[in-house]
Length: 431
Image (cartoon, rainbow, N blue to C red; front, side, top):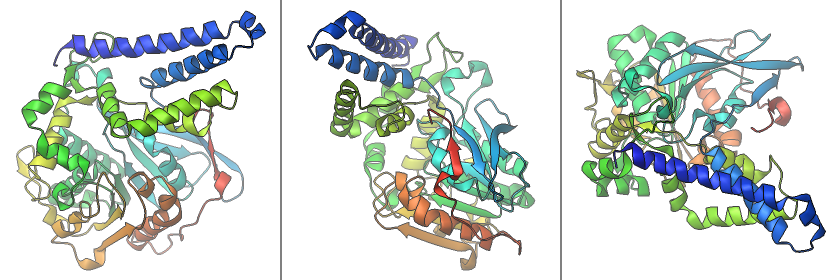
């Protein structure tokens, strides 16, 4: 599979389907066909519209779309996305609010690198922004990174997080979501051993596989069934000539998307059939529920082969972090060295990706941390997405996280968390 031809074949199939959709929509919308009462033309145009949009979104990075917030004085404050640290494989960005004094809470949100862009956390950022200065790890699509930039594996990822934490300083509160949870824990432990004064004040770990064997899921079962040789043979390809990263070994986003879709094929198939019917009846819109969800879900990014393979081997198969045997640049990262950073874990009772037990294992590894600096929450009825961006996050988990941050901020004047009014975040069109 490690050939440019297979990568380009997938891109050609995607491009062809996008073209077919655009052609069908344009031809079936020809004015003369409006004289016919045959519904086939409306159906064809609707199919083309949905198909074109679907396949076009697969290679487009979504926009953050957060344009402004309403401040305490009731006036609009524009929001700028500013790069604080720029690196080849990912940047640390800040959502800078104009005309607002620095907030007491400074939050670094560690976004997953698991197939989707950091914009998957758009609603999480939007919910935190009225009460915090928010920074986010914005990972780059591996297909756009030249081979000359070198490799990027789990150790490089960890060191990126270390650099980002150092750049923000010790008054930072880190929130990691899903895939980066174990590596964020390792990065904090690395700082505890190498540069204690740069450690963040608190660490909130949400739905991540610190110990994958603590509770079985389809993800962990797959990791046990497949050998590393099989995984490398089936999943890894070289970026084609169309992109700057031509020749780089990656786990392609399109291949990842095929796996995502196959897990719930019947549900996705019905969703698209229903959307075509709505479009044919003139009931679909550019920002309806279907398009808001799938514009984000279909936007996938390539991961470097070394990052994907080392994650499976070292985090899932060998359980190096769960066994406290993780090393970075030849140095053992002792999670027990964390003695000052308050750690909170959050799990969803119905999480089928990182099941309850996998994330709370982090607290057992923090052997040097007093119990007063440990906290755990299991959200009843919540699935994986809900614990960081859904109803459970908005109504229950977010207030708990902000209270935890305030409790361990070291400042007496930290304001109590407030719930922003529903219209307080303005999203740009298309978000």
